[in-house]
Image (cartoon, rainbow, N blue to C red; front, side, top):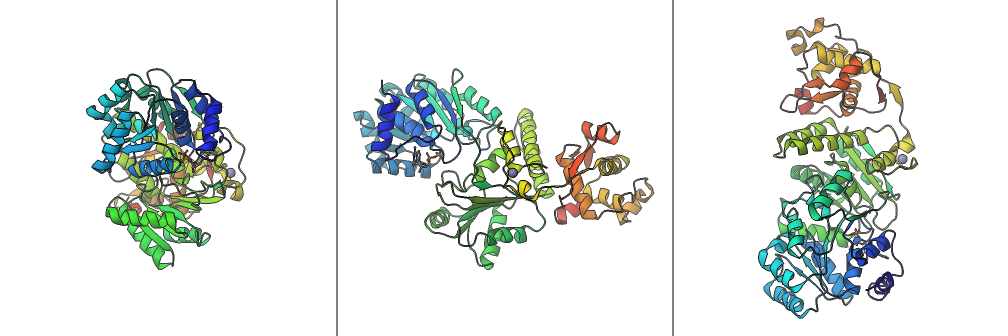
Length: 520
Ligand code: ADP
Ligand code: ZN
């Protein structure tokens, strides 16, 4: 039986590294002991070696499932470069390459076979492998197995069945991001028994975390980018259209900004990605289609022009910065329009109710991170189940935030919502609070309400920001089907009746008046 010392030897002779990185050794040991393993390790931790080393010190063939052809291509090329017999089977193979790989498998010389989940589920390949015998099945990006992960892929859902077909072969699943629910789901879907689970620290101390309410996104982003002239980074946008527009705008401002989204022609996408990888000082303006499997160590910043989908997605996306360990900067902009859009997406999705409920909760967790009163990193790590001290260099640690007892203000908001029958969105509620006699206010007689004008001492923008926090705090919920009418939740009701108090941030400003917000 090969031992950890054999693995260490291969680490040095084949890969030229002198020591394991934190976490690698324990995982490799468990695999060599024959255990099924679920390993959650941050991006850049060195997950690949956790299956490559066992594959090389053992007899037989290791299958590596990977969702991305580009990723397979890079890994296979790197392994071959190090003299390792590795090959890939996927839709991008030409026939010659595929038959060379198959021949190497038949002869038993191939050590590592990278394969797409679709290909592995095909009966012919699975049967061939079952007859031939496989010594280890490694599933990379394993969060794709779970509906609760941030990147569910239906073809991953069948991998549990594939594992059985391969004769209940020893299996390891690897991912960079999985919260508790996702980990459990992965374990259930892939393994017959609970696997040995390794969760390595999520802290990436070299990343500076910052989030800001969206007031003027182009201006905020260009201020951020201005601190990173000549550096490489990524700006994530929510839509293809937003990508195009922002890339153009940044181009006008003198940045080397390239667009990337799934709607671009394959050749253009590839060219832009190559430029980003090979040259310095390129800003990739992209949808989330960009990034998985892109290994550029010196990405110095990641910005979100709009909110990510979940904390996991956020973590994964900012995690593309600073893989070399040197300081890297992040900025995430968030606004009420993002929140409404996301909630609407969830409501309109085809997912079962139970999944939707979880999606809402997860999104709420992200909103809470955006509006967190304390250390951003602490809040982020707490989400992944880690406790930590205040980091000292996130936006909240540096700037600090002023908290205030907002019970009275919250009651005013809730009361205006209640007295108008929970039928109106922010703008109308704000008009009532500041005593603005709009046409709608007069027509509905809302200028006679007791709450009319009680919030005169604050600007409309301040009230919008407060409503957003009250929303983030779960005191009101949104009528997602149309006009953005606020409804009071049970907790909101407790505040309205004076049974609970509310603490809010004093420094959260409202997003700019968007058309949508005005209509609401
Ligand atoms: P992950 O898949 O966890 O994001 P990779 O497996 O791609 O990470 O590894 C990231 C980088 O770290 C690669 O360039 C890899 O060669 C390097 N690396 C991995 N393990 C070690 C090690 N023990 N010593 C030095 N470099 C390592
Ligand atoms: Zn901090």
